[in-house]
Length: 133
Image (cartoon, rainbow, N blue to C red; front, side):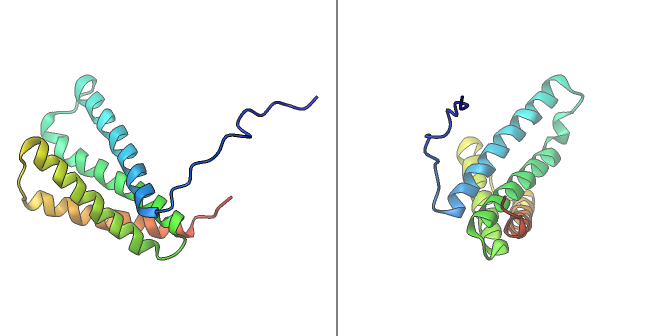
């Protein structure tokens, strides 16, 4: 008797743009990081004064993951696609924060943009060199 494979006939979704898929993955990582920070604030010993430092870490990890996906999907020039994704991610976060809470541009904003650019480029370089299985 053959085993039944229910996932055999399900079509796979393929995004043509490495940038779009990277932004999607970065958004998922951002959502998970925000949930983790919220849980740490509510049930942990974290203070609200520590939140900016941890949010920068979440943005860096999100940009790294998005750059990794963008670099892996592009196959070439991972630093370019990852860095571009980092800048796009940072600008998207700035737009959302401005629209949500009327936040202006400051030194912390510049720090976040540089961090997302560098971590996205690093993720893109790692993603290009990741082996496909």
